Image (cartoon, rainbow, N blue to C red; front, side):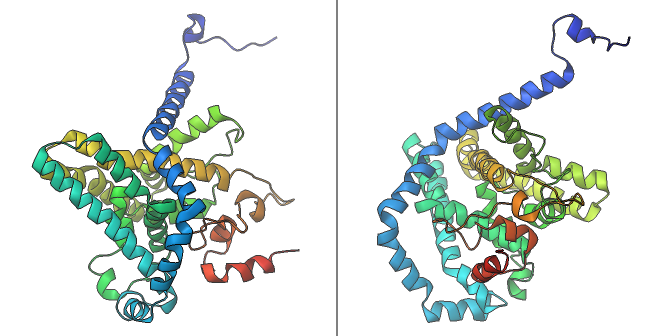
Length: 349
């Protein structure tokens, strides 16, 4: 008769190192949840419902009218993008930039002049950060995402100077480490399709359990800060990706906050305006991916069944340039969002 010897920790009624680690990860998830409820739930929830109930009927027609303006699209196609179809992103990109940079410049000037930010101004900044219907937050993430997937989207004069504008510049103020999409998202998440080794891996967790979701929140935090992706690239010997992402981490964690501190002389400013968006986006990404990759099934050969392990939202009211179809995004990445309806019909049995 065999038995497993008890560890010294178990004999003394103390948690083992593994159990202690799990409890700390769970507490991290609880902290991120409470933080989200305090700072981000209302800006996202209220503006989402406000957009659906009435604001879309007020601002939607105006947006569509300007977005379709020929001079605007001519300019975008002539000077910004390499293909005409990418001009669909131009006007919304302008709105995201104006909202982000305008509100950021205002609160920096206020901080410099008055030495502090009143809480009502911080809350107002969070509302502008999210935008009506989440259009600013969603736009900043979506365009950074597009840039990571389409390296030649911009004309050479932009690629060789500014680079990926949303991923590596605007993205810093939306919790996005520069070069995250061109490295981690492409070389890990899409390479593994959410499988083992992915920094977004979740199939070892119970996706119907809030307790396990707390553990997943910790896992996504390790992704958003850059740690788990750097560890993956280091272990796999992917030095090109590692060097690019470590550069992004230096920009995000050292360079930008140093410049902001020099401009504001305030650690409180850094916490509320620079760090909070990363914490809020971490929760949002975890929540979305728990749905996008919530199911897993394999065929007789042990391969992932595509339409199961990546979710497709049909006729969603908040689709953002095809982001609703996560199945096509993983397994038909080159299909442009305007062609998704045709692609989806081709997959129906």
